[in-house]
Amino acid sequence: MPLVPGLLITNAVRDLMAGHLVSGLSKGAEAFLTAFAIALTSFVASAAFGIIFNAPRRMLLHGGFVGMIGWIIYIVLEYAADAVPATLAATIAVGVISQLFSRMFRAPVIIFSVAGIIPLVPGGLAYNAMRNFVQNDYGAAMEMAAKALMLSGAIAIGLVLSEVLNQMIRRLPESLRAKP
Image (cartoon, one colour):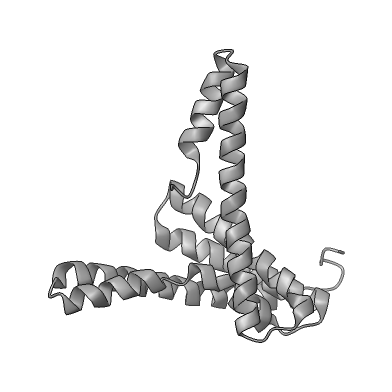
């Protein structure tokens, strides 16, 4: 299953423009439901990791929301560009939202940031790299390991950049800050 229902959206618009309302609306509904299922499963996965890490129950939904937003940003940007800048942008967004939720709900920022980056961690890629090493396919293993390392670095850099952004906002004079 493709992660972004791009072909469904394209065909739905094409059918609607051609005047085939039933076909266009059904393809549009299928595209919407596919995108909704992707968002929902990333929400559930992030909230489930909050349970594993013993996050407070009242923060599980917020942690799931942060993970869902991060995954949606990643999927949309990865569809248009490479996975590394998509991971960096998604992690920056996760970090900024985590900082905001930390202040809003008076909870440690780590609750939200860990739940938010879990969908972005390249665990499957790292596993496949190690599997290829064991199978003596060193070319593919090195390629996958390098990609996993770049994605992990993008996550680390994104979290640091979001913290720097947060510190810059905190140091702004009160008159320049946006009022919530």
